[in-house]
Image (cartoon, rainbow, N blue to C red; front, top):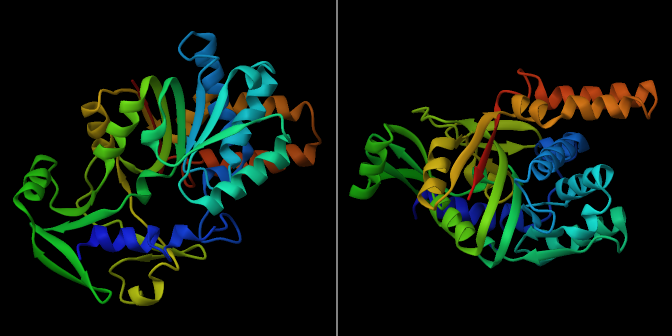
Length: 328
C-alpha cells in the first residue's frame, strides 16, 4: 500500500490511534496549545468578538470547532464570549465536527460539566454536513493529521509488513512536486476535498486554524512519531514501525502554501497568516491576562503567565506554530 493508506490506517483504522480517546498533556504523548492554557481559546474568542463589533461576523451565526478532542477549546471560547456579552450564548449556535461516537459522548459530558444545560452543541459527522448561512470555524492541529504521501527523487513510498519501500511516482504526483519545487518531503492528501466540502455547505464563513509548519517546501522529511513526549523521526533506526503502528501518534509539518492553494481553489481568500505568538498577541491574550491579574491572586497570575509564555515564546510554541485565517 502507499504510505498515505498506511498512515490513514495507523490513525483512523478500526484500531487506529485516534479511535481510542487519548490524553493530551502531561499524561499523553504530546501537548497542544489548547491543553496548555484556557487563554488560547479565550484569545480566539476575543478575536471573534472584535470581528463581531466590526460587523465582520454574525451574532446569530454558528461557532464550530473541527476536531475538538475533549471540547476544551470550544468551551473556553464560549466562556470568554459570555464574559464579553452574555447574550451571545443565546444568539449563537455551537457545533463540533466529530465522527467518532465515543468521542462525541466525552465531549458532551465535558460541556455539561462546564455549562450544565445552558449550552447546547450540535454534532456533525463530517464537515460536508454543515449547511448554514454563516459559520466561524476554528481548529487546532488538524492539518498535520491528514494522511500524506512520502516523495523523494520522483519516487513515492510504499509500505509492506511495516517496511518502507519506494516505487516510481505517478505522472500527476511528479507534476505536483515540480510545480511546488518539491524534491523530498510529504505531500498531504485530502486538503482539496476538505476545502471543497467546507465551501459547499456555507454561504459565508471564517476559518481560523493553528498548526506547526511553514509556508514553503522544506525539501526534507519532517514526518515523525510521538510517544510520551519523545520524538522519533520516521526513518530513525531506533523506531520499530510494527511496534509503534496505531499505538503512537504520527505527524508531520504542515505546508501552509498547500493549505492556502487548496482553499483558494475552493473560493476562499487569505485574511491572515502569522506566527502563533503574533496572532495570539493581536487577538488580545496579553490584555486578557492583565484583566485576569486584577481578579486573582499573585500566585494564580504567575501560573497563568507561565502557561502563556509557553504559547508565545519563540523558543517554545510561539514561532514554530502558525495561524492562518481563511474566509469565504
